[in-house]
Amino acid sequence: MRVYLDHAATSPLRPEVLNAYTEALQLVGNPSAIHSGGQSSRAILEGARERLAKVAHCDRNEVIFTSGGTESNNLAIKGLFAERAGNLIITTAAEHHAVLDAVEYLETQGAEVHWLKLNRDGQIEMDELSKVLEERSAETALIALMWVNNETGIVTPIHEVTALAAKYGVPVHSDAVAAFGHMPTNFAESGLATMALTGHKLGGPVGTGALIVSRATKVVPLLHGGGQERGFRAGTMDAAGALALAVAAETPQPDYTGLEALAVKLITPLGNLTRGASQGIPNILNFTFEGCPGDSLLFLLDQAEIEVSNGSACTAGVARASHVLLAMGFSEAEASSALRVSFGPQTTAEDVKALAEALPKVVATARKI
Image (cartoon, rainbow, N blue to C red; front, top):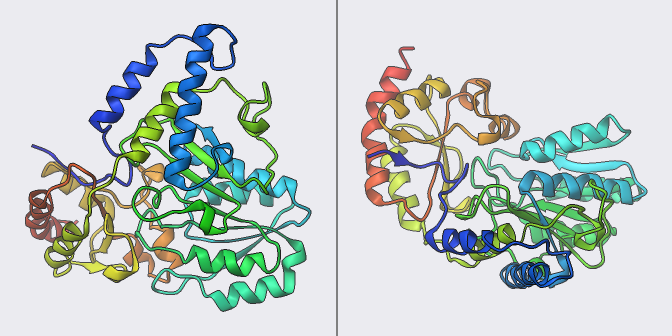
């Protein structure tokens, strides 16, 4: 029996989501059509919008359905940049590549980027952000900071960031893919202009997601066509996918605190936890193992029928040091020996123990490679 501990990459469809999804898929009708089939599909879509808005604590009209986190982040960052007068983007080098690559693309279009430094705990220094805004707020198009880091689980103090940014009238976008459903993410109270989320980290289908756009915020669309989704995202709307996303968002995630404590207790003697347990969410843990190539750790654990990752699955298959750990000040060797362990609803204490039991041999073998 294989042990799956890579839920931060993707989590299996939950039964209630699968049931709702497959039933909705059988309905024929474009949500924009005026006939009965179309209007039935529209009712599913708008019902899903209401349900997701309730979970996200936002207005139903602020929910823009997308294909997932990558599209949502691109729409927010490129759309805000195109809408605003300034050309400065403030972010960090530890963001998901859906943010980093979008920002780096905008650099080719004339954007300037201020890369906030991270300390060893993976946090920005608010004094640095304050100084940049004080000096250059008039030039600043947006701030982009992820709510929870998808590799380390470290939580960014989003409310502090938005409170500071509000003094200067600068919009803040947050990639909340790793946060939404795993910790409180009240959009109405967050102060955010935009927030990205996706379904497949919650037990929903791949290809479902949303960008929450505040009513006071405008973004220039990436896709042009029929003007669907408030004109921010053209394309035939996926009613079944929207419903599946809403059901996944409504379904409570387990409390992973006990699994976190067990993993820290069993694994830390073999490696080094890259953050303090109190600094992040309990379902994502990141360890480094001195002298162990990360790809060797993955291969050997896979041979032992245990599935984990080095970091973001979006860069899987490429042997490189974790850009997140490098941004936090870890050495190239440390950042190349990382192992991310992430929990989901199906994870048990026995799964964590199986990993801990396999690691001593795996680490010893990896150090010889």
